[in-house]
Image 1 (tube, rainbow, N blue to C red):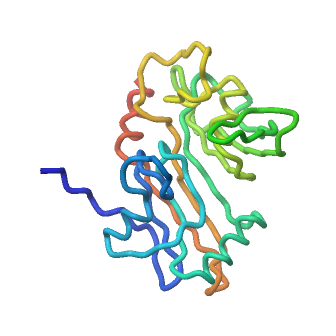
Image 2 (image 1 turned 180 degrees about the vertical axis):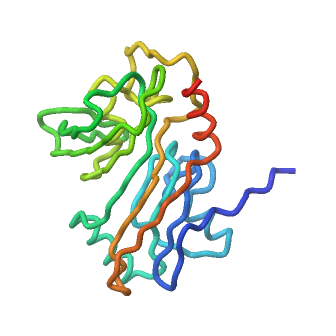
Length: 221
């Protein structure tokens, strides 16, 4: 018998907005040819019909925003376009990230399911600060200013500090890390957005899931 799936954790909910903690390995939206339930489908199985507003990579976990009606979705999509949504990520990068605080501004050219740094790409901005430097890794807090495809992963790989578990954008780079991660060490940690109906800002935090907590413990040894 298949193992029962745990309900998707809810971080915030009212009559118009829903924020959940997406597990790693589940798609943010249905994708043709992809296996497994997407996040909206999993929520529907949990008795919630929700409309996606933004996406996380399949490997990435954490706070994900949904609308519960079409008008709210339109308003939240506008907030994303106008960059009034604050998206803060947790990450574990390979090596010692220097400077300890900075901004990466490599332009990104999106090419279907892949993207790369290119002068022909769109302007992209990622702000970060080191939370702590460990033996062979750096724990980071990241503010995503723009939202290009795979932006954080591409920026840190291009800067010479691929995220732990990065397989898509770290090819040909020697890793100083002597332990492995089953997925990329990236988590949507905090989300703050203007509520379309309450006219107030909502702030939500998604705790690190057990696999990343365990990964951080291994990195600290």
